[in-house]
Image 1 (cartoon, rainbow, N blue to C red):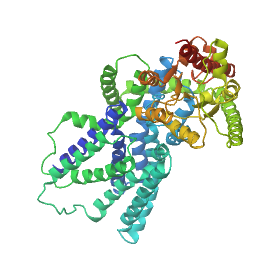
Image 2: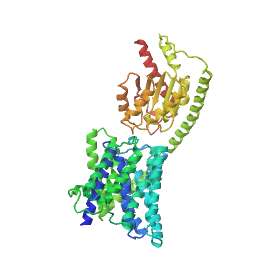
Image 3: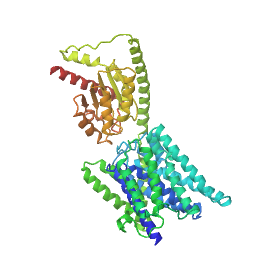
Image 4: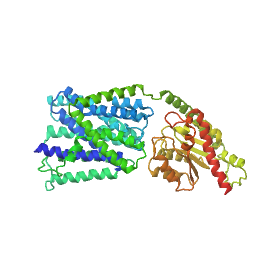
Amino acid sequence: MKNKVFNQNISLLRFIFCSAVLLYHLNILKGGYLAVCSFFTLAGYFSTLSLNKNISLVSYYIKRFKKIYLPLIIVVVSTITTLGLLNINIFNFKSEITSVILGYNNYFQINANIDYFAKNINSPFIHLWYIAILLQIELIFPIIFTLIKKIGNKLNKYIPFIFMFILSIISTVFFYYTSQSSNITITYYNTFTRLFSFLLGSTLAIYRTDINAIPKHKFRKLPIGIRFIVYLILQIILFIAISSSSKLFALSMIATTIITLKLIELSTILFNKNIVVNSKIIKFISDISYEIYLIQYPIIYLFSLTKIPNILIILLTITLTILISYIIHISLKKRNTFLKLMFILLIIYSGYKYITMTDNKKEINELKDKLSDNQEIMKKKQEEYKKKAQEKKEEIIKEEKKEKVISEEEVMNYVTNLKVVGIGDSIMLNTIDTLYEAFPNGYFDALKNRTICDGYDVLKEIKDSGITWDVIVFNLGTNGEPNRRCKENLRGLAGGKEIFWLTTTNPDVSETNPDLINYANEFDNIHILDWPTEVNNHPEYLYSDNTHLKPEATKPYVDFIKNGIYNYYLEKEKN
């Protein structure tokens, strides 16, 4: 009876955690990412219980290989096959697949500066950083734990618990400290910062098996079942309330881990009845929760390439995710010759696609070299600008009312001499020298992988340095669309000046342009420069990623910006 109760209550936890992650990926539950901490905690707890049974390391690794790695490979080869059959090309696809297969995808994403919270669906594998961390931990942890356990058996049974407890505290403090002092994306992906949840789960397992199998509870007047429900409600509130941009981000991850520890503890002791009515659906979802995590994002990615209404995408994603997860789960449980044959065919086809896949390294390297050169040009031009501004520091500059321009030539001359401040990402960086030629009084700052939120710090630094502007040009949005607050902050800092904002050509952030256009329509001083429409007439402008500019496109890009500003002032003059 105890085993039945134990399994049902843990199944309920897995069901809730699995649902939270899926709803987060579907942009429904803003704090669902916290459930990953819960899964790390469960993994640490049950891995330690398994190792405590004195099974050999070889047996343990075989068991974990079947549990974690085989489903991962099935999902990867199935995704490659599907993308291949649909003739979908992904920029730099091979490198990402390699990082997934070899278990270092989290560091691949750190190196690529991929923002997990930007919500730009540009890869079917962006969620597999979690599996990479899990694989790394499961590779090293059993060896360390086995060694510590042997020492404990010889010297003192409390040594494994003390060691793991201290390590858990250090890891938790390290996570919190890192979250306050560096890029939160790096903190989120790094194995050593995310280790604390796993270690705390392991510490609880050691305590339960080696020290106190049935801990005493002080508040006996409050039934264990009620306490379980209270903790569960607290957990769900965190999933609902704490977004990734919250100041409580790091503390919430720690709190989620601690609450999960209490839920595990209360799930496994002294229950005389189930917390919920026995539900086959809960048990079913719990059993395939790992497969659901693996397959959900490839399905979400594929639907993101369609024009299907969002509500229908949500329903189809949930249905297909559960169905395919069940098929994968069953295929690994049952010895079915047909399923084995299908899997072999998938491996052969996906292996062929992987080997023959073009990762555009030559184009990427050319682009990197060009961006690097332009970074130096930009710095030089910035220094020249600052030097010129310093020489004029003693002068008293009076703002005079501009004379009305009466001809197109005079309007163009006026636009050419405007003090233009431009802030952008790698697209703008690729055109820095041409921008300074077009706007000799301009000041431009561009950087690879820059987001709209990053633009605020750049503009504030420019403003604080004493640089003024007549108009601002933004080429931000290629790397994902953040919340409205980031755009609001930028607009406020612009001080009411005219803003010219280029839409993005990146096909993987389809929601960015409509959101940006809708936002611009609310304000008279924000003007959209529709660069994608211009590019549609000149496909030769872009590299094969359909985003970055080829060298021959830099002048048309700058002319497009200049003409956009010119047309605005010409129309203004006519009126």
